[in-house]
Length: 135
Image 1: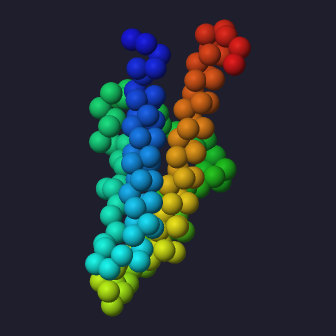
Image 2: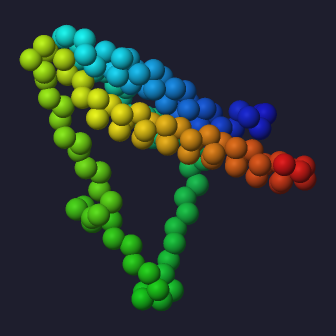
């Protein structure tokens, strides 16, 4: 098995391709923001769980030796829960694209793509270091 055929690289490559395809759709939405009757399109959210069949099934657990050292709360309603963005409005011409929402999606998509490429590059660097090669 080649190093680049590892499941982590395959998953990251799929994620980057998804972001590229989404960027194209979002660009179409922005370009057609003034087109009467145009409805914006978006891709279904990328989910690593659907693609983790090739990942290892090993699990890691943690234990607190001193309960006062840290606490983790996974209760719903915490500060980090996902929030829905406000729905877009339909203009009198029937257009359903709001430029502000689309630009937020474009920016988020770009940052997520950059995070995936950074993780990909760092994973390659780690493997090169582990093999004794300089970056």
